[in-house]
Length: 354
Image (cartoon, rainbow, N blue to C red):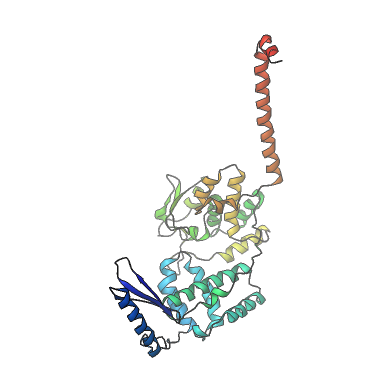
């Protein structure tokens, strides 16, 4: 129990009991504060602060529902990722109260996910979602501690991103059906994220001035993405009589899943091991290979920092050799310039250096 003065000169008693912190203004003198502190200690024994009150039990699925509605959807651009993670978490923790979920139970959940063949990256995303969910439960005074906070992330064996060759890029586009072809063309020529393309509205597409306006980016920043001839041709051929560029007639919104069509295009193009996100990676890598500076590439991709863009820079043996050859050319030009100056100097000046 701590007795101190606040900024207004008042004496306060600050104490914590059973995980709850209480602050009370107790008087204008230290002696009065000490007397009040003694009374508070006695009161704690009688439990007037309700420390012994049993908190109502909350089921995991109920907390998950309120977490999504009150927090995730209101504050996170990536709330759909939380929803996906919680669908799996609820399968395992459904019917259990928050107070029943312990660190070892969470570890058992991860072992099950590993046995199901789920990647380390996905397991870590689910753990991060679970940690935030329990943080909110603590904040909302539904539990006292976060059991997921004691569980560490596991090391991820990052899958090497697949970069398409120019021939594979053309084969993929040629093999794609008409519905997904404009999506792939836009992705390969802008590096836009999957959801940025699929949720695109015609009001944000300016084919006359040649740019696409992204107003709801994952990084939280809006940006303009230039449109080249390939994208212009792909989008110009689409109907512009609705709100969305890629509408879903059944839902009235936009197409949210193109996995089946993408898989079919890959199979017909005879391209293996390609993920939709690799299209964005390919676009970024090709821009950097073409000599576009990282700052420009970063702005096109909508990255929050240049460090994120640097992941797409892959020095190849050919590029490394080209780099040192360029240095050799610069050195040679510098040496030739010096020799030219010496030749133009009068003989008397050259002798004066000896």
